Length: 244
Image (tube, rainbow, N blue to C red; front, side):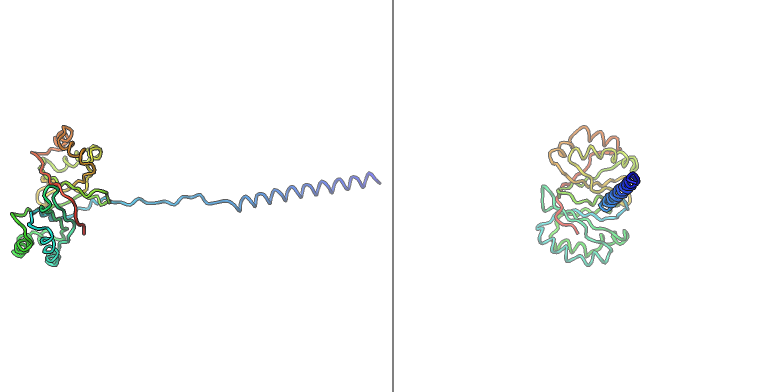
């Protein structure tokens, strides 16, 4: 009889222990699941700052007697520019002579832009603004622009002739890292509206010492030969003083 009671107690004790262990395991698993976190990282799409859609522009360079007087006259003539489908884009002042002014406007219609350049009203407006000498006007098709914000406002506008546009573009793109290493960052380039062998290049100068040394180096001369550049480039250094 005692043997039977002892066996029964032992059986129930083992059952109790098994149930207790099973319950503890379930509770632990539930606790682990409840504290699980989502480690999926948010995907951030980098901002694209380069523009490769061709953009026609009219670029004008001239000297003024007084910049403030000229600027007031330029602003007053804005409605006329808009009537011809042109939109102010950038104004720069020469690095060596701050009264040398560069103006770039975006063009909607090249035929209207050509008519604007011949408009007698433009000549009168320039005279009123104190423009001296003969202005230089160039209609350009920019095929590349970099709109990223950078710390320097110093620019170089370089123009030259090449043997072939496509060959020049390939060689120019191949020299990108070399230019960056020498303090020069490409901001825009293109060609004359009516002649793609007349190159127009705008660069930012991020390190003047390196850039000016590079302009005189054999490395850049080699790049010009590879790109089929004809003659010596013409370079105008200026600071951007207004963006629209």
